[in-house]
Every structure is written in structure tokens, then in C-alpha cells.
Image (cartoon, rainbow, N blue to C red; front, side, top):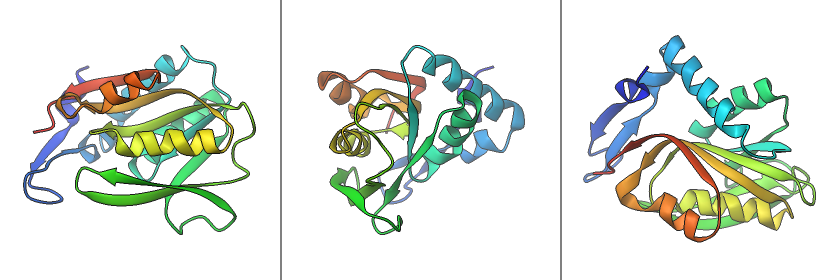
Length: 175
């Protein structure tokens, strides 16, 4: 099954010049969605993982299912002011703006090995912020798994240069 066949491309969304890779066409097909989860589970077995984290919101779609299958705790990395208890925060640049993500301070224990799952990597700003949250929490990033890598935007290369391990299920150009 070629999962790329289930990704819809939308021009000029969320703003002019962006080519948005839409996963909703993948998740609405039960066979393609199941295959995606199975591939993430299989790739995650390469790493020592204590917990699974996902970046809001589309990362939750994949990571929660993987967490359930692997019987690992699920950690939510959320947008600013969405978590009710004490948090660690990291500000970062998006390809089309700025943002902040947070994690509860009690979500990750010292030396926890955390797998970070997200739907897509573009420039890598969000992923790098997620890694910083794990590290601020005294955990270690086991690896990243992305469903889609926008290979020409350099996010994976930036993370690899910083020493992170990366897996992705498919590659698309970002433009």
C-alpha cells in the first residue's frame, strides 16, 4: 500500500505560498490509517521507549493509537495555555509565524526515554521545541517519527545535525 496516495495536497493553505499536506484523507480510510499506525509501531521498536509524546494536534491522531498498542504512557505537548497544571514552555518559529508549546512538569521523569510522534515535519521548528520540552523535563528524546517529511524544507536535516534519530513514513516536497 502506498500511503502517499492517501495524502491530499492543498495550495495556498493556511496562507498563500504554502502547500498543505492533508492527512485527513489518510485517517478517514480505515485501511490506510491502520497501515500508518502499524508502520509507526514497527519503526518505534528500533528504540528504547518509556513514554510516547505527540505534538498538538495532528500528532495526537497517531501517537495515542501507538501508545495504546505499545502500552506506553502518552504525553501531550500542547499549545500555550491548554494544560491546567504547572508547565514547562518553549517558544519557537513556524514557517508561517511563531508559537509556544508546553508540557506538564510532572509528565516526564528524569531519564525517561521519550519517542516524539507528529504528522509532519517541515522546517523542524516545532519538533525542535518538542525536544527542548523533553530535555527541560530531564527526559531524553529516543527518536522522532513523522508520517510526512517535507524533505526540501530541511527539518529532518536540522534534527539530524543536532544528534536526534528520525524515522518518517513518506517524503513530499514542501512546495
